[in-house]
Picture 1 (cartoon, rainbow, N blue to C red):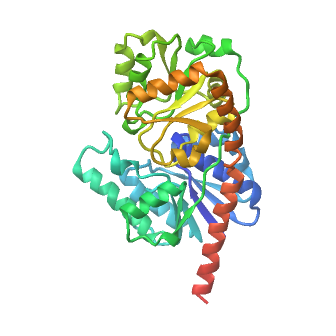
Picture 2: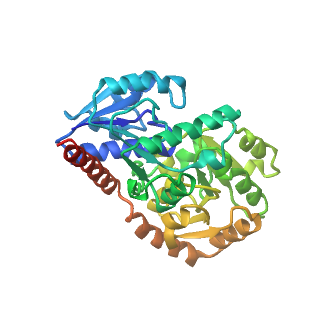
Picture 3: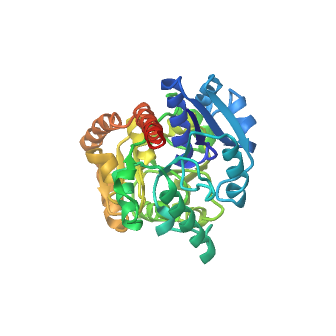
Length: 384
């Protein structure tokens, strides 16, 4: 089979990590099929052809004989995505195309699989989609992607149920729940002094990792931190978002601004070091389809506090201490509890070690490959 995979979001948020790890594991376990990997043109030289590129060293596996890279000038969520990208994919005459996000070209008619990570824009459209037209365009593209897909991969049971709730015309048998894996960041122990010199970070702190969006509730976390009255620091890791400057503003205007550290973008090695030196990881999101960062924290032996919403209880199980993200007092109380109770921290660390074993990128790839194979089998039977 010729199988295409949309990896244009490589290096961008959790979806990029999903694409990277899925491709890497598929290349390991499947030597029979040929994979056509679609990447954004501006990323090719820096992220793939340079083996020293720090965040995508694992994709050196793309040099294998059954992987081929195709450049495309089609940024995500752009008009070119519906024209240039569509034409590029069509030219490859693929047996199956795997779109790793909902943004499927509406004119694409060959068999495809689409992965739906969440339906965040339905609930939190954000400032990028300001106009009614943009919001309608998102819903149209999403609805088309779901309707025409031969198979839909949902990254959690919660996401599957959310799809069915919002799009009742979808047959539930069409949706396959395949969990993501837990962590693939480099297992490098960075010395604390290295982190101190770059980020002015102490030996112990509360840590948040993720994109800056409204649904991530970072402002709620900052407000809760201000009420802690604790001798600790708050480290917020993530690339500043020009559409959501409220985080920088809240940090700058806080009376505890010296204790709130915004690192900006960090490398995988730096991220590992930041996890390993944290007193606790806090994930205050209002809405998540899966939630990779808390699992990465667990993999690094960090106790996790998490909001009790959406998919998070499903994914994290009993390995996290939960709070109501809309109740800042509850968040404050739970943070105090985890900082004060050494036994609780140790219990959560041990449970976290076991929990992450439930999520494997290898298993994710194996189940995804079975989806590809089942589609080809059904296609052959239908056309015989």
